[in-house]
Length: 319
Image (tube, rainbow, N blue to C red; front, side):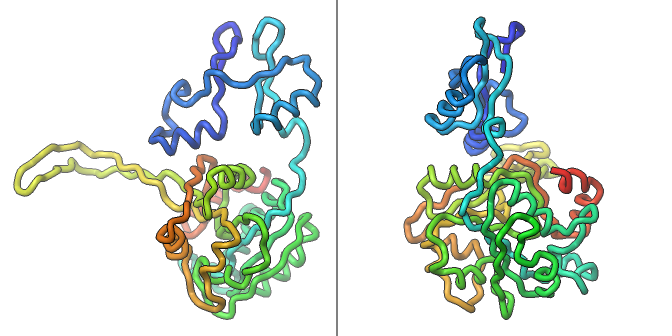
C-alpha cells in the first residue's frame, strides 16, 4: 500500500491475509487492518543476488523495491528469481470414489476424468502440481481405475512420477493411506481429486512446518444468512432479536498436510475417514492446525458445481 507520493505505507502478504482470517477478519476487511506497517524493503538498484539473500534470510517471498527517494518502484518476488524448483514432497490424490452425486455422468467414467474445457479434472490438478514443483504423486484408485491409469500413465508427460494405490473396496477418505505406511520420511500432501483451486501448496507446507503440527487442514470460510429474524431465548424470555443474521464458519476444504507418523493410526484394508483419524490425533494431544484458503476453490461434487467449472473453464485450464 502506498500514499499519493508512492511512499510505502505497508505490505499485505499471503500470510497476513491468512492470519487475519484466523483472527476473525473477512476478505472484506480494510487493508490497513491486515497490513504489516514495517515490512522489509530493498533498494531497486540492489543486485538480484542480494535481494534473493534478503528473501531467504527472513523467509519471505515478496519485497518492495524503493528508489533513492523511498518511493516504491516495483515488487520483487521469488517468481522473479526462478521457476519453482522440484521438491520431493509426496502428494496423494484420492481418486477412488464413485461420484454418485454426478450419476449418470459417472456411469462409465470416473469423476476425476470428467472434462473441464476439454481437459480431465484430474489432469488439471496434476498440471497444477507440476507447475508448483511437485514431482512424486500417488493416486488412490478404485472405481473404473483403468481409465485413470490409461490416461495418466506414469506421469512422465506431465513432468511427474506417478504411482498408484489400489483400493479393492471403498476405504473412505483416509483408509487408502494405510498402505503408504513406511514410504514417507517427510510431511506430505493429501488432496481430494475433485477439487479445483489455485492454492499454493508449498505455502501450506511451510505453514504446516512452522506450526509444528502433526496435521494441517486446509479450511475455507463458509457463510450463510438466516432469511428470518432470529429470536434468542432464555427459557420463555426473549434476550435479544437479530434480523437475518449472517453466520460464518470454517469448513474442511479437502486438502491436508500430514506427518508420516499419522499413518500409524490406520489399519490396512479397514475403512477410515479423515475427520475420525484427525480427531484421534487431537485426542492424543497432538497439534492439528488450520490453514485458511482464500484462493479460488471449487469442489466439483454436484452437477451445479460441474456446470460452474465448465462455464468458466479458462480459469482452470490456462492457469
